[in-house]
Each structure stands twice: as C-alpha cells, then as structure tokens.
Length: 143
Image (cartoon, rainbow, N blue to C red; front, side, top):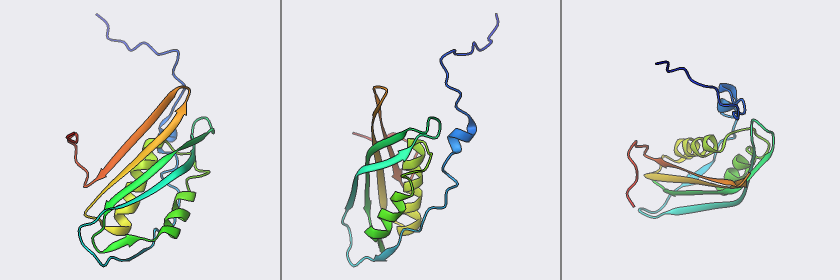
C-alpha cells in the first residue's frame, strides 16, 4: 500500500521565507529603568496593535498584552511604544510577533517571569490567540 502524500488543492503556497518573515528586522532597543521594589506584577496593554500578514500583505489587528514580574529593571514605556510601532508595517506572522516580543522583553529586563499574549482579530472568520511565557517550558500550563 502506498503512503504517498496527496497535495491539498486548497493550500495557499506558504513558504519557509514567509515563516521567517520579519524575524530579521532591526527592532529598536527597549529601554529600562531601575526597579525599586520586589514581587509585583506589571501589565502593559496595547489594544490597537497592528502588523501585516507576510503572505497577503493585509493588515492584522489585535491586542497585545505584556505581563511580567520585574527583577532589577522595568521597561520604559515610550521606548516600548516605539518598539511596538516597528511591527506596524512589518510582514510577520502573529505567532512570530508574540515570541519575538517575549524574547526582546526578556533580553531588556531579565524578569522573574513574563507572559505575552497576542489576541488577534478575526480575518476570514478565524481569530488567533497566541501566548508565550518565560521561563520557557514545554509543558502545558495548568488551569
């Protein structure tokens, strides 16, 4: 019996280049300031986050939230805003956005923990919610 893969006539031609799109962008540094306290949480909410689909060139809209517990440094919000503006015209997948933001927040602040959630608006009837956490683990979170 043959195990040949039958091509799906409905695939849209996504490539490895589409998958990597945007990850090599030059993102501005997220500036920080010295934290004065211990054991508290910061929530930053961007309810009008925008980017561009690397395949179609259509805009993506969503809400991006950044939650973290600072260790020695906190994010400076004006530089964070300028950092997030970089995504406005950038062709990048939603999953890549959330993971790139997490990596850059961790690089800037070295938090105790961080959670980035991208809640992207429906396009074609489907919405996407992407969550990335630090420290990164491969186990599912408990509810």
